[in-house]
Amino acid sequence: MKKNILFATFTIIALFLLSRELPAGIPPGEELFFQAGQAYKEGRFQEAAEGYEQLIQSGYVGGHLHYNLGNCYFRLNRLGQAILNYERAYLFIPRDADLNFNLGYTRDQTRDAVSQSRSFINMTFFWLNSLNRNEIFWGFALLNGLFWLFLLVRLFSQSEWTYHAFLLLLIFWVIGGISFGLKMFQTKTDNRAIILKKEVNVQAGPDIHDIILFKIHEGTVLSHERSEDGWSLIRLPDQKRGWVKAEAIENINQSSPCPTFGP
Image (cartoon, rainbow, N blue to C red):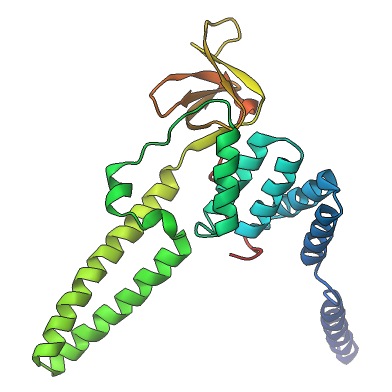
């Protein structure tokens, strides 16, 4: 009995020591990120893109990761993939100056001049697009904490300054709560997609023999309404609609597993 206990104890200790030695040195993800960056600097853009794609497929996400991948695809003259990854990076780092310049530049290179209309909500709550989801969440969390703190203070102090401070905080608390709710709604309902092929036929129905309504080109941003039997129903900002092959587009919004690289 004692021998079994000693053996089990020894096994647990050995496994613990082995597990401590496994992550020694640079973590695999960071090493691959560094190697991809080095390949980009040396002009090996395809190799760099493959490295960043491997990181994403392994579960890593982040604004700078998608930004770097977008740069690789731009260098490879793959405009659709470049815009797709710039748009994904924008979800994480919307105020990054380099990203905004590159995104604007690549949009100007697209063949289809499709204007992106702004909704009433985006014009009213203009700060939503300048803040990512985490920033709005933590901002509202801070306002929420201050709100309940001042509410507690008001129970013990009825002075005039606490009353005015509480009213001001109440206004910001309501605005913060609405902003957080709208941001979550935008994230959940974001069905934007990018055309990845050089030229795509938009057809009247989900069949190769259906009438071709019009053609659309690489890099165009559109709405992906639904998919059916290998086809996707898309809608342009000018309300034109039609069906395209599912592999011709890719949605911008995707799940956000951990860990992340940068913001």
